Length: 272
Image (cartoon, rainbow, N blue to C red):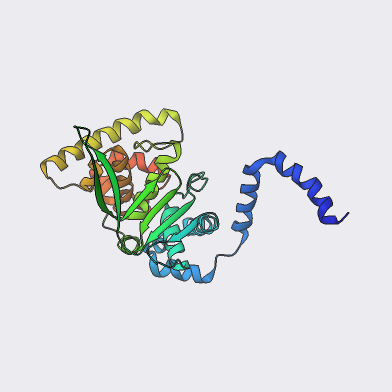
């Protein structure tokens, strides 16, 4: 009997005993030990002003998260787009900003990221009040599905990465939805560190969401995109964009909301 067969006899029961969680953590440790590729570092410097602004400890965290994210998630090019490392690193870097300083399982429900060259069209069936079914077509920059995939426009991904102060970032937006969807249907209340935190979260986000709805209804300007007034899930995603991109304005104009997001993300972008 060969040594490989003997090893398999002993290791297979051990693998079953330890469970998939153990082996997932083991594989991640192996990835963490690998050096960050120099070509990927060049992409970060070229594409990600965020990276240059981060403190050294967060830069190191982000690089390790990027390595695991790219190792575990499948990237699929759509409409003839060929996926390369520029796309993988640029998308992963923005997605992993949301994981810094947090005990993360790397978006566990997410299996793949579909990337289109630019904005894409989706068709949805809509039933009106009379029960009539009609097809609606929408042009989107991104979309997050609870069933395991995120869809992104590469053109808008690049624009969001380059412009760090406008409060618009499609990758941050869609991956905030992924965090919200970890518990099931997105409703603007992601998994918080402690159950006692939900009361303050609900009170703060409820008041701010209602305020944005009023501003949108009357056409008044807001720090937040009026798209955030669509529903609480969209408001959380829009508020996350503003938190990472316009932290000074958010902390001044909406201090309670800034405090909630800072506690959730365990970050203080004001210090960057």
